[in-house]
Length: 332
Image (cartoon, rainbow, N blue to C red; front, top):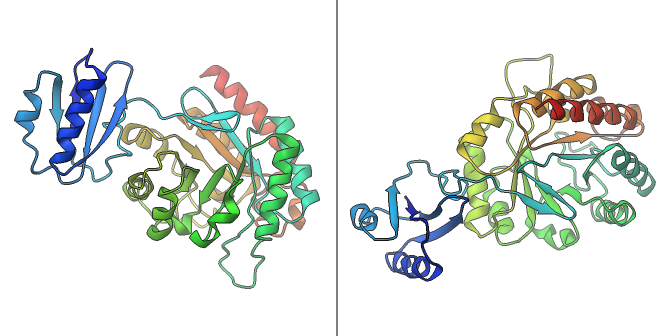
């Protein structure tokens, strides 16, 4: 349920109303929009008399929301959420390009890539320190050392860093990480999501291989229910019957999620197909369809990468992609 307040409602009136709603056993989420202030009622709203609420002097209208995701719902928060990360922002009129290696392999490697992607136009640096792999015999990442190398690259280049968390017990290692990534395999690791909800870190939440948009938003809701509203959604491809590509990029997710939610969304064209030559056309398509940014895997020597070399592009190709994306955005 949401209550749309009339223009000119004072802060004291809003405070009095929310205090009363709390006595009725519901939590409140207040969104101050350009035209209206909206109070979202979270919890068991069956006891709330909608007619009584709508009759109040400061209330313009009352609507019941059937979707189970409340905090992530655009009806609760009509304006786009813009998340500040270091000296950049995600959402609104800004366009974010997150780039870097699938996995951090050495300090020299991540430093070289960080400098090259920044020069080409990247606004954040990504790199895997903990790597979830299908096979237990594959490279699993440098773990704490990998995070240290990312932090050093951040100090050298000024780029905020993005890296994936595997276990809530590792949170202490992520104190200097700007954006904590929740990978596709952990999208429904609800205990991890609850812990991340207690932090104030920005969370990049990836859609699972076979999860619906509703399930993605419900996972975001787990984090937001804990008090953390700094969430970036990420579409990275879903598993279909197609075999020529690793996954199928669901571009329709962008406008659909924009309609359902106020949270920003970025596209990962690298994992979407697993094929490096498809990164550029998918990046352009994602830009044109209205994504708030891209997350691209870049490696200085893809044939010898320890992880996902087939989907990684070179710094030179990345520079070309960034240039093409800027041209698409200038047309839009």
